[in-house]
Image (cartoon, rainbow, N blue to C red; front, side, top):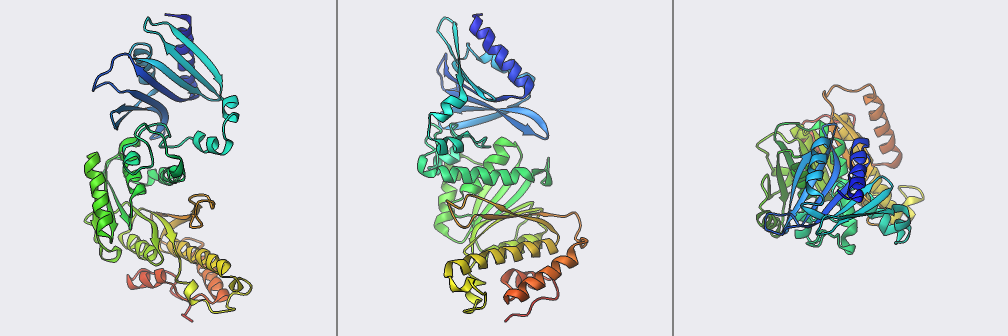
Length: 409
């Protein structure tokens, strides 16, 4: 074995054992066939608190995934490098390596200074692309290719990079609470108002291919053309465990317990309807990105909110924030641990907040329940805020949330 090849395997083995291996790309297969992947991407993943490596093999327009533990990864790399693949690109923390094997098996290994390479490119774009995404750039993902976000070669299209970042950010929110979902059983998911379903397909991809969990996902939307478009993607990609229905949030009745309910950019009070339904079902985890919060803004009278109501844009933003604060408080009161988090940067959209609610083990009031009710009443009194749609829906469903409601003005 050539000296450079020995050095290459020493670098790989050391990086795997230390946990510093960030990515390996195998390309230029020695033999081309329909069953040989043109490219293999290997990256670290954490599965059930254990370090593993995900192997992604690209065959035509499809990508196949396999998770291997560190010893199996080292064995497979030794069997593949220089024999099955002649080009290797290796990323270890802070460094990049490129290895090229000749047809005679001679290896040439080059180490590159990753930081120098980074500063030689556009800083903003590179900062985004260096982020350790759960769905990486440069690896063809069928649903992203089909929806136009990626090219067939796996390159994120520049005009869609913000959407690519949004998809990954959303998956991060799920990854943070995945331990609150079934570990071995089928995970039932409902997506209210799924629209074009970028994030519905991202949910399916993450659970099915990254986490290797079984899911049953229902995407619900009122528009028939949207449902038909999503169905075509399902059929084209041959996906299982995901389906789309035309229907209304308020009348949809799941056949199984819903573990994860998603409402992303459901307009105005449609967000409240989806939250109320999820609470009614006792859903384990709720993710909601509110949109177009017009309800409160439409009730505000001239001069009702000092200073802010002089300026339409400021009043609108205050009403949006106040509505979401009330939604979060109501979810807390009916048994959920709730967070309001930034979804995407303000430079992309002003509708950038995500409400994540995880059901507490018991509906028993927490020690802070009375304080939250007091804060809610003080807040609504201060700004003359009436009872909003979510509070009315919870009352209609006989779900208690702050019984001493502020009376409508």
